[in-house]
Length: 140
Image 1 (cartoon, rainbow, N blue to C red):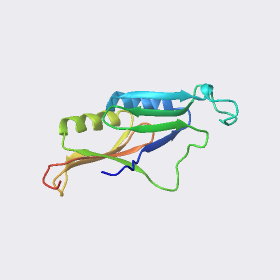
Image 2 (cartoon, one colour):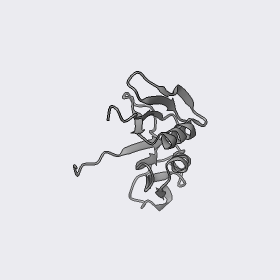
Image 3 (cartoon, rainbow, N blue to C red):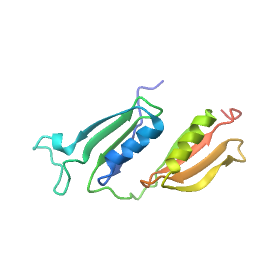
Image 4 (tube, helix red, strand yellow):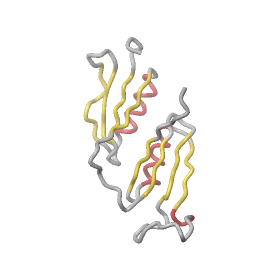
């Protein structure tokens, strides 16, 4: 196994704490967060940044590892990014899909696809797009 890790880092405009609590309620784990109020004065947060906003947050110890921050520059990028979850635990992945869809929009409901797996995708209430693939085990 490689020593290189790829972590997802999401940016929000004042919704980081709410988003991370939402993801914690779905994936479990613990949140380690630092609000801008704890950032030393010499580290620029930027004018207009609320002290209650999170400079950094890490969700770990549950099903996934996820990092995030609040920034005034949060906006859609020119690149499209979808987060993809996969595995064989159908009950758990269905539960995750349902919880992520609360307040969001399901684009493709979970259903068996031509490749043999159950697949669906959605955009959650924070604008993050998720794909869920429940493997049949035949193509693993």
